[in-house]
Image (cartoon, rainbow, N blue to C red; front, top):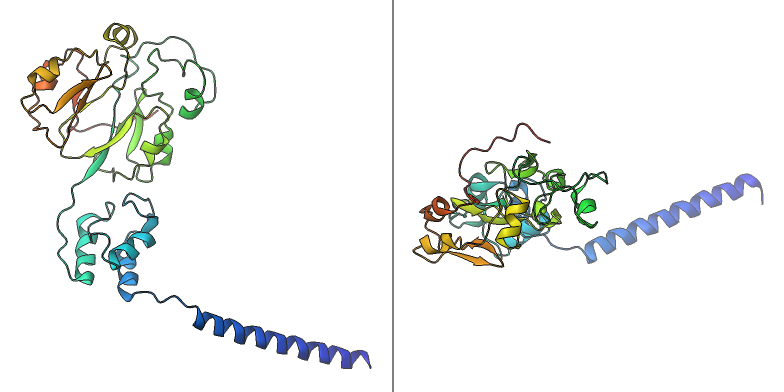
Length: 276
């Protein structure tokens, strides 16, 4: 058999194999195809595509599938907000309703001018690295913000920055995705209703005497705040005050009485242009 004949036979065999593989792939594609709900595709097209997980589902695809199945409300996307909810409600034929906005809140007031320094930190400049070693960076308070900004680097919405040594949240940009919460090794950040006027900006569980030695803006557990609250919405646990945001009436009496001024009015404008 000549070389040219062998080449022709090889080409024919390859063509036949390729054709058979193609037929099998088409058959398999039709046989095992997963039908997609047309509404799911329409809902997915409305979603912003950030895939931030703020909705509690694995990305926009997961949320679209849940909405199409009726397992999630049409206003579940915090990034899209009311405009996206309105579009999806038309697709699903239901009322959009009103979703309560939530935002991140940093429980620390230990700015550079208030937190006492105990040493000079020369290690890796990340919160996780500093938190992993004895002493936790340079601040005397071991429970406060370390100030290296890992929460800032994971935020997809430019909603959190380090200002004067502590993380600060821009409420107008925050979508409560929770990435900063999961990243903070100090467990300082929590998600709270945006309507909440006041928050306790301290996380130290030390006694009042030690707190005063470590920071000028730390909760000393004096319980004066609890005596002012007429609804029992604030309590002191492990030497630090906590607010029940569901029952708080935002009267501000606790903040006015707090001697350490760690119950802060968090509804004012926060300047975050100057970051560290």
